[in-house]
Length: 392
Image 1 (cartoon, rainbow, N blue to C red):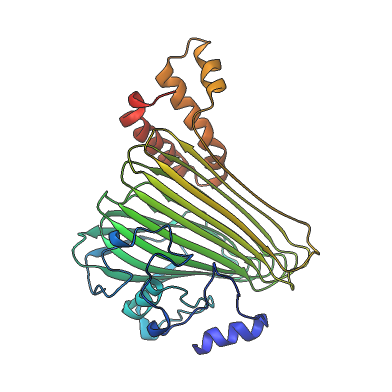
Image 2 (spheres, rainbow, N blue to C red):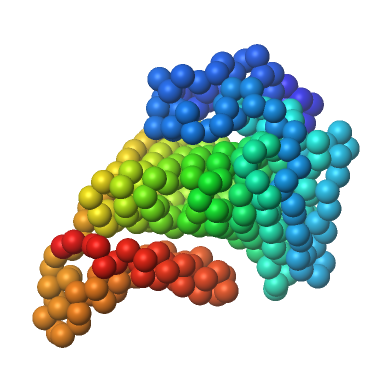
């Protein structure tokens, strides 16, 4: 255990998570056995397609470049790992890929929003992969100072085999929107672990947009360092033939009177398109008066596509304001299609309207206009390629 991690653990005065969904963390790679696929946290992941990221593939590739467009007032620099303050979020690797990426990352990209700053323009990091042959590892740390307000976007493109850890720290009263856009080429493999620590009365919005790649496994967690913190996790994904997209969410209520709201929506089309959503909320005995809800909705557009959706709720105290979860997976609503077609709208256009309506409410909640427009256009591109083959 590092010094920074021990300090956080002492500050929270919490016992380790005891859950089959959340193994005990460790920086020592020897504590993380090579997964076999029988483990609960790996049973949905196609290990054979990870290019040995979960085993011993060298993570010494340098083919991923970073282009930064930092908003005025925001600092974005790369520093040697030995000189960084990584670990500030209290995160400890909970699986082998994360531990390997932590050891292998030679540098840490640090984005810092000063205290009291209200940054109007988003800060964008564009990561572009130049090939899948040599796997690589990265580490990103985003810090939002007290009472600051900002938007940070991480945009992935190109081809890569990429293992990554992302830490996000919100100090008291901060408001941060953090967005990842997975727009990789179809040959990419990306395994990323993200952890956020939310300060007193801080507001954190996490947005995950997943469109490209061969295999994507994204694990996102958040905990609270003080009362009144709020976490909103939004996700939009669209899987095509052969793609595997896996999102694992964990809201760890470690303080009283905190909130979490998780909403992910996805569409699938094509043979062997596979999406996985694992949601979990842990309400610790210390977390009295909290509110939480998690929901995942999937729209299956063609035969041969499969969506796995597993919501979980672990409660250690009965003194809460509210807690719940929901999950739906289904095809087109025949009544919606019939209604539209009965008013003269062609079948293909009716299907497009239903899909756009499915995504519309969550897209509006993103709160970044340029990204909302891009996402709407991307969904239309996906539909334009396949909508002619959709069946009622």
